[in-house]
Length: 168
Length: 68
Image 1: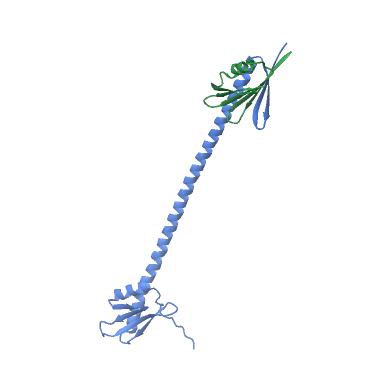
Image 2 (image 1 turned 90 degrees about the horizontal axis):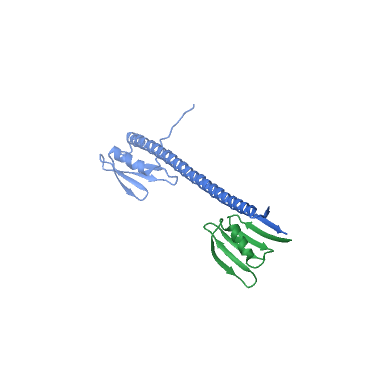
């Protein structure tokens, strides 16, 4: 003979358990790790106790612990639990997309700034080179006009013009 | 034969340093002023015991002149 069994969904999340009890119209109080359910119908107590593995186990009066009650509790819990898991997953996905967008925007902004600074650096460099070249040209032309010969060299990264004039 | 030599050094910012050789007396200053008068403006002249040093500062560059 073979058989197949299925266990009830374990009750793990206290928020969903309490919401399920609310949905079923049950009264309850919290006592440490326990949820004490006071049956309206039979004025007896049942208890949902948190085990070491995190699961809540229902114990108590059998009048309260009817199979119907347990099924209704578990079904309600399952629906709430699934909704909660789905809601958190959706919120997480939204936040991840938001974080990605923010990172992308920041990256774009930094890149634009980098390009702007690069262009500015290039402009300053070109301006400086242009000015140095114009200085050289002015000295060269003036020296020639004054009758000097001009020899250009580079000494320690600087332009050097040696002007020589001889009179007899 | 008389040889007059002016060594003009232009740095990376366009600043100019000029050194003369072979000139007598104030002739070196005259030659440098003639050479550089349209390039920058003279702001002050500083003379030392050993040689005359002329500092010229324009809007954008400076010129140091040494007489040899």
